[in-house]
Length: 78
Picture 1 (cartoon, rainbow, N blue to C red):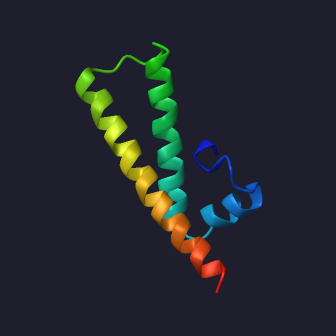
Picture 2: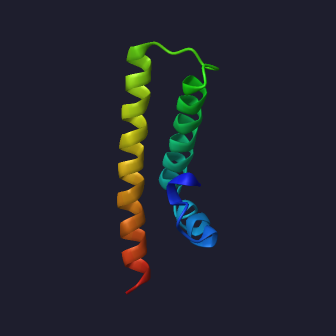
């Protein structure tokens, strides 16, 4: 949950459970984060092109999740 480390755990769990696309996107972001961490430690050999692609995909997932989070938060305060 590093992406939402400053948020309440229950809120994050409720957010992730809102729909299957949000859940899929969240876990894909986590998977990419783990792969990039492993690559950084030298445990997962990746080409430069693959590293760039994974970083880009992770950033896109993060942006989408942040947008969904903001929409979800706004809908809860109405």
